[in-house]
Length: 80
Image 1 (cartoon, rainbow, N blue to C red):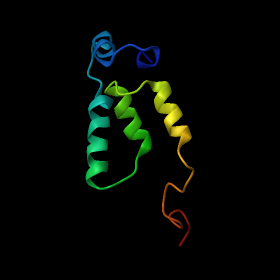
Image 2 (image 1 turned 180 degrees about the vertical axis):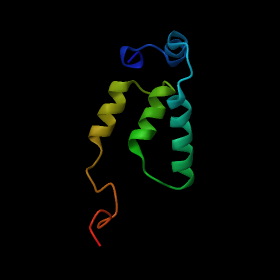
Image 3 (image 1 turned 135 degrees about the vertical axis):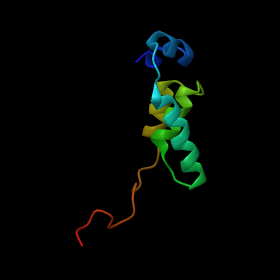
Image 4 (image 1 turned 180 degrees about the horizontal axis):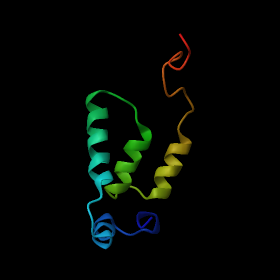
């Protein structure tokens, strides 16, 4: 919530005073997605916000501006 108020990540982490695993996890998820050539737009934008490359609002607008398309292969969730 602090990031949404414009508090820099380092300050937000200092205020929390505990390990915030999601910061490290976001980096690892994106690194793995890039290696496997996966399109994970939410993860990419979360990482960008955590890195200070965009604000949460900018990330949300970028996600909402994406062209709508299937996020998974056809038939993935059909009964066999």
